[in-house]
Image (cartoon, rainbow, N blue to C red; front, top):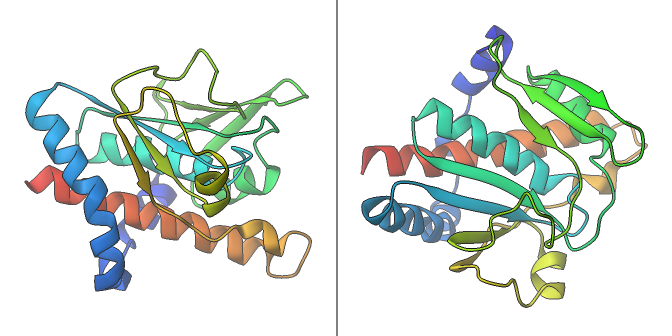
Length: 202
């Protein structure tokens, strides 16, 4: 793992997660525990309206947490509308230590790497019908209230679990843009690492 990324992970502070929030996160911990006791792998699909910010942060941190804790949990992301991976999302991941590269122009394919091996996470905006997503045996993790309200039915998901985050889009083109995107990414990363750490020790 790249040194700067590893250093940032060591700074994830689980103590900043409130007891009330930990109760909310417990639903996903319980789901993962239950699944892993019965099956060899778990699929998580993080859902947000445009699949461009919060759901993609969650996909990246979910993938990295599964590697870090050696858990057979596979992370995907999707949206109710197809747009593209927001450049501010990608820039934030780079600031936190990931390497990225882009292929294509319209809804480009973003390769996100966390080490010098061939490990990579592929980001692009997609909707629920996309062929790369699991069609059964998965949990839908709702990362924004808009997607939760406007996507009342997700076919074949085993569980629908809210894990809502405020949208950093509110700070686009302001002096707080970089700070708020990084804050949101770190918040999501910290909570996902906390969740996976609980599963790894159960």
